[in-house]
Length: 103
Image (cartoon, rainbow, N blue to C red; front, side, top):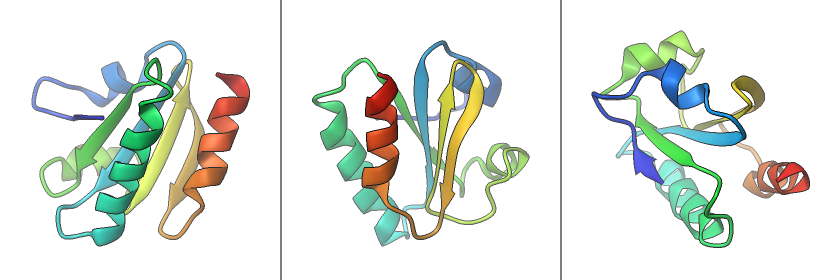
């Protein structure tokens, strides 16, 4: 999982062909850190699926433009279109299973 940075735009990150994970989080959010570790572990067996961590503290405007007002939040884009969105308490395993079903 790579970190979203000043050179990124949400359009470029989400507009890729295939599947792209976005994890919106904050350093002070323990569930966000846990989700990041789980997604990174999952990526070891699914290296072709990119994942991007977006710190809402640093990129609040970008997160808000995509409707993210609380963390943790995951958005999964498929061929540039929002496919899955989960906020707060959710099953990461369900999200990963859905992605695996089309990958």
